[in-house]
Amino acid sequence: MGRRGPAPKPTALKLLHGVDRHNPGRVNRAEPQPAADAIEPPDWLSDQAAAVWDRYAPDLIDKGVLTAWDVEALGCWCDAVVRRRDAAGHVEREGAVVESDVFNKNGDVSGTRLGKNPWLLALDAADAQVARYGARFGLTPSDRSQLSIGADTGLGAERLLS
Image (cartoon, rainbow, N blue to C red; front, side):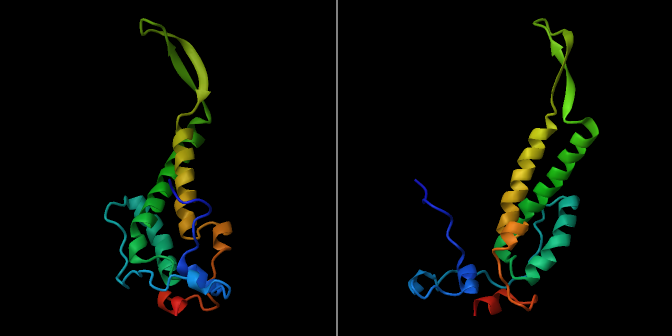
């Protein structure tokens, strides 16, 4: 059985908000930290997903939100953004409701019916992935409102945690 309740706040975020003086032992001061390695996009990204990476990653790195350990998660977000755009394009061109053939028991077309465009399923799945992965990086307004990086926007992770 998994843990109950909300996910614990990351240690870096606890420190940014100030250590709780009533429960000072609740901050994990021995939490492992990623090395300050160069952060490169995953090689499996498509050209379109790499363009999304190039748009967002530099700023996330500068803010100390993206580390070497987060590369795969941000890559998944970039991939989901591209899949969402593709599915949305199909729905825009084809419409939310599409006409499909109806077949009889012999496999012959016996008519047509209106139904939900299958691309809506892909759009919904990509939307959920974009929201889920984006929340990890503060890429939505509500998630971003929970983060604090200080007045200097060029702060690195080392300065935030010291």
